[in-house]
Length: 221
View 1 (tube, rainbow, N blue to C red):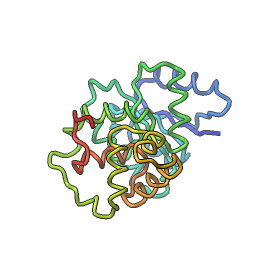
View 2 (view 1 turned 90 degrees about the vertical axis):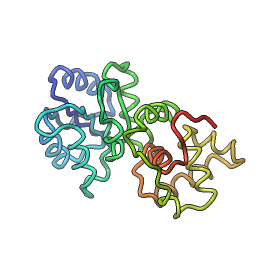
View 3 (view 1 turned 120 degrees about the vertical axis):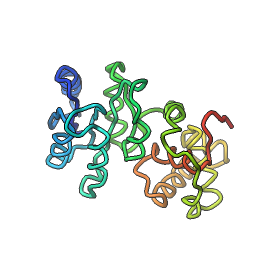
View 4 (view 1 turned 90 degrees about the horizontal axis):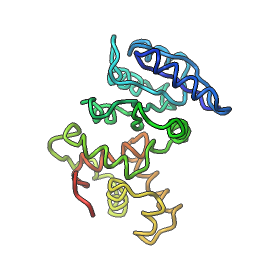
């Protein structure tokens, strides 16, 4: 059973998400929150697998709440999904840097919302790598003004190559084909990179690829 918490200051949004998700046999709603402070308390108490987190909330917004949750080692198993109108939210990039596992727009199709919860609960990137890359390109300016490649010193040449391909939005299968590796070997490389860089998930690796200058916004290989 995947345990889900919903944080949004609009009761109508929370109710809609709850009704949709509770209809699925493998999803359970463990609570709702209308403010950032309530969201942090809810997650600390229930330790859900996934949090659907709005950015714009009173009494501690979603960005602040995300930072508080990610900073708590006891909540390392909780994955945060930023639920946003996207075009209007200026802090999406900062939220991803803070540890959110991906994006979800509020007008997404119901089937996509359900799929997103299951995907992120499994520890994968919420969106397809290509979509994640395009979203990050739009907020690249919020990530870091000057590239800092010092983080890459812990990686082997092959791992840097793999990280660059992750940053370009490639799946493990695509990376394997590009580098003449099996998908399992590609996945192993990605896992090792995540461990070395202390990344929570694949989305965080994309962020690192941009921050270090390994991938440049708007550049296609």
